[in-house]
Image (cartoon, rainbow over all chains, first blue to last red; front, side):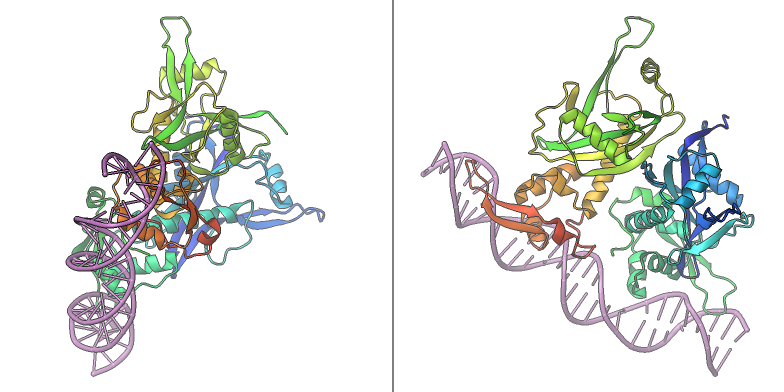
Amino acid sequence: MDFRKIDNLSVDCVVLRLEDNALNVLLRKRTLNLYNENLPEIDDWVLPGHYVLKSNNLGETANRVFKELTGEDHLNKNQFRTYGNAARIKSDRDLLWVRSRGAKVRTITVAYYLIVASNKDLLDMDDSLKWFKLKSLPQLGFDHQQIINDAYEDVKSKIITDPLIFDFVAIKFTLNELQMAFETILDVELDNRNFRKKVSSKSYIVPLEEKQKGVSKKPSRLYMFSKDVYSHVVETDYIINK
Amino acid sequence: MDFRKIDNLSVDCVVLRLEDNALNVLLRKRTLNLYNENLPEIDDWVLPGHYVLKSNNLGETANRVFKELTGEDHLNKNQFRTYGNAARIKSDRDLLWVRSRGAKVRTITVAYYLIVASNKDLLDMDDSLKWFKLKSLPQLGFDHQQIINDAYEDVKSKIITDPLIFDFVAIKFTLNELQMAFETILDVELDNRNFRKKVSSKSYIVPLEEKQKGVSKKPSRLYMFSKDVYSHVVETDYIINK
DNA sequence: TCAAAAGTGTTTGTCCTACACCCATGC
DNA sequence: GCATGGGTGTAGGACAAACACTTTTGA
């Protein structure tokens, strides 16, 4: 392994998760207090990221970001855009931060999004991290607001045609959970009966005999997504039409 | 302007064009003959590309590639993926080539595709360039076969939802030209009457009074794509459903 | 007047939409 | 036995699919 950094190349991760009926993104606190009143105090948030090491691939770097922050491995990652404009860093805060780190002013950032299933416990999550609702983000450093917007647009368009939705829910999910996931991400309302009808017609969404447990109501049936079946049926068999 | 290169960052362009009822891609000849029988002779093709200059943005670099090769400006460019794996360069040919240029073995390539309208004349095209049918490409250097495949997949998926098709045809086009463009790119057959019906229902595809000239048959009506109208109608008003 | 491509309507079936009530369970 | 969400069917309308002939022009 060559652990030296490629000093102008980083990977940033937009880590997404559904929680409390909202799409959440994982951010890292960025602080720098120079005790000099002429300099701006930095106290905002950024996307978790990492420089690419000489012997790491881009995707591996995205994995590493997630592993270092949460202790968990993460398999599904989606590269959606690369940011490398000469004038990416504009604000004084960002320039100050970059200089304080001895980093290059022009960094190329390959951006990925990672989706964490809503039932997953992240026990060892780094203290500097916090989930924010996508709709009420704090002040963000660099062009990270833009990156998050782009990630969200990409998710919204891919979720219509790709089986991305199953990354958001547990491996065994109820149809109502699946519906809520669509509704939350796309910010639409779907008719429950029509949704169930459509889903039932998909061979790759397979009903289990198993039912929910520990709920004080009628327990609902569980379903699984079959990747195998999915990859062998026609390409245009989309999940929903919206 | 700072004309120094960022020596590990390049932009490669998949330049696409419809011609002879086929999707074509523009490639550049790569030759290196070392007159040493122990070394492989290089005589294959690669995507046109360019290192990113210190004062150029990524998109500007894509423009520059096209301008240098054809003398023409090109506005629409689509960034679709970035390639930066440590082991991108595998073959002896590629290693030899890279070393002969004094370039770095690990280069990050931001890939764009550019679409050239089928009626556009490229008068000043560089001699080293040639159009190839996507379906019968020659031997390609580096991972450029992969890049072209990825570009094509991206075009096919975007062309359903985005107004990308209009980049392939002339500014004033006939409906049959538009239909053929879809058919060629997606490799499907469409019903002419149904296609016309669907297109007529789109407010942003506007019929002109003008007709084709200089054809020895019934001249067909010309249409234009109105970007303004398009951007003001609902997002889900797709062009075709396939 | 012929060749070549442009242009046009109708029917059939499928799929999306809208909508309200009973069911099964845990407490 | 009641509160809570789970689960079900039908009718109407919109849109996609299938299909063949007439029209217009230049040569």
